Length: 263
Ligand SMILES: Cc1cc2nc3c(=O)[nH]c(=O)nc-3n(C[C@H](O)[C@H](O)[C@H](O)COP(=O)(O)O)c2cc1C
Image 1 (cartoon, rainbow, N blue to C red):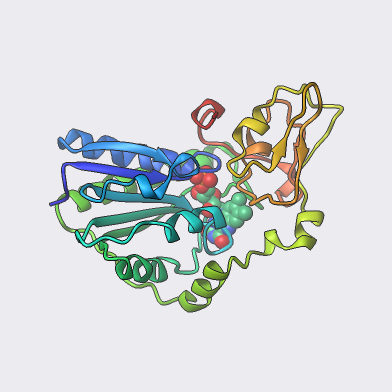
Image 2: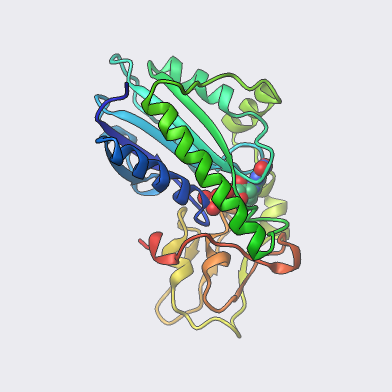
């Protein structure tokens, strides 16, 4: 049985992970377990209460996850309380198996891994499916999230080691090697604001989890070279003014409203 308080730390770029995390919270709550949601981008690992069960939720990016999410995970405090921990990631189809290395990192810190699950949701990059396909995938993903939460509650969940590419991904994750973060890609795949379309509403600036977008008074948003490609800025821009050069026909995706993520 898990503890009756769960602190669920999550990051979600375009809403898939948030939907999954909220579905799991609802299932836990129905079973009398209190769940507090914490945005990773606003949380300090040092403030964690290690007497609670800890949840981690994040999207797969480049067969790993975003570097700032890794940074958070690597900064989790060591525990002597065998703090229970579970994880969920959302992905479009192939994760590369980061679940295994993550388990090792957490075990070394003294945590007790009780469950890991990868949940397929619509792709938010390269090829965004049509609306009906997205809806089907979301429904199926949320069914899986519900089942996973039940499995955690009833002690049926497992955190196995997925061997595919794990060691390579572990290396890539630890060293922060991400194609999108190379200087070349920061230039080639640059997310930029089209000043003719932009109405300076500032939503992109408020949404960026890594403060890569700045806006001086009355100026257009400026994108720096530290983008992690979570795609929030392009996905939620109400004017479609931020182009995403990697998305098929520039089609963007979001599963929730921007207000869920506004600072
Ligand atoms: C930069 C980037 C890289 C991605 N890489 C992968 C990947 O390697 N494998 C995969 O299955 N999905 C990949 N995806 C798709 C997302 O993992 C998937 O759509 C996820 O559910 C998005 O979650 P979010 O809406 O919470 O951000 C990637 C998405 C982005 C933006």
